[in-house]
Structures are given as C-alpha cells and as structure tokens.
Image 1: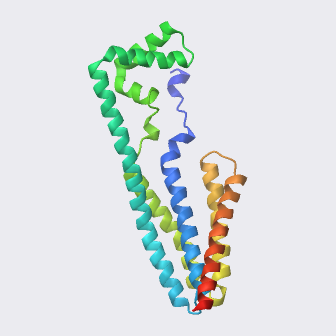
Image 2: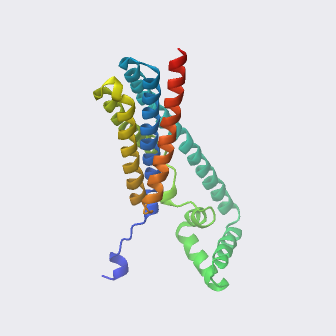
Image 3: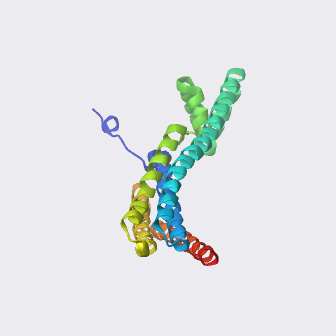
Length: 233
C-alpha cells in the first residue's frame, strides 16, 4: 500500500469548533464566578450571601453560555445553509458559468488555465456544490457550525471552571475567601491559558499572561465595587 494511502494527517484546525467553545466557557466560568464571589465577599461580613451568589452565578452562567452559544452558532449555521441553497440554485441554473468561476479561482491561486479548467471539471463531476462551498465560500467540514456541540461544550466547561472557586469559597473561612478565591482562580486561569495554547498549537506564554491579566482586572474591579457598596451600606 502506498504511503499516500496510509498517511492520515491531523490538523489543529480540526479542533477549532469545540476548542473555542471550551476555552471561552471555562474562562468565563472562572472569571465571572470568582469575580462575583470576591465582590460579594468584599461587601458582606456573612458567608451565606457569598455562597448563594456564587451558586446562582454558576447555574445562571452555565445556562446563559449554552443559550448564547446555541443562538450564535445557529445563526452561523443558518447562514451556511442559505449560502449552500443559493449556490445549489446557481449550479442548477447555469453550471457552465459556475465551472468557469471555479476555474478562475484556481487560476488566481497559480494554476494555468488548462489545468485549472481540468481541475474544475473533475471536482464538479465529483461534488459540484462541495467544491464551490469550499473554494468559493471558504466553508469546509471542520469549520462547519455545530450549535448543539458548541452549547453543550460551553455549558459543561463553564460549570467546570465555575465550580472550583465556588468550592474554595465553601471551604475557606470568611476572612480568607477573597484571597483564597483570587489565588485559586489565577492558578486555574494560568493553567487554562497554557492548556488552551498547547492544544491549539500556539506558544504558551502570551496566551497565559493574557488570560491572567484580564482575570485579575475583573476580580480587582468587582472587589473594589463590593468594598465601596459594602462601606456605603
């Protein structure tokens, strides 16, 4: 058997759909829940409101992430279907113009006209719509919108990210909640940034620092607001 037949090359772009939703969900779960806990803890001398706010934030945030991702990615999916329907109608109405259009794309990418025409003929004979969706519109299988996958991934990873600072708040004494939640959350954010970068094939340092910076800013602002309103009350 030839090497071309046995080689099965994987690409990092294959992961882009679930990776984006997973990183976004986990990051949002950590930052929003930790910030909520820190803000309420800064405003209250009682631990009960802190835990209630954290639990409510976890549940509401997971549902919000799922709904938001589903609606957003569904809109993308609707657009893809509309483009596919329009392209299919154009192929049925004037296949020769569509063939020339496809050949012109290949010429613009460096093929000479005879070869571009031959490639267009062969690809359209096999899957005309697929060839136009891929080469004219830039849509491929691993970039296709998957609303349910994105919604479930976002909700699950938000919950996973949010539950750790919440557990830390449950276990820590009231006087240590703010410091403990901040430390645990920053450690988690650093790990998340590093893992996300490695899975996506990027360098580790810059994504990790970026995640840490925005998480620290969010917690600092909510702590300041909680302290301000707590002092006023």
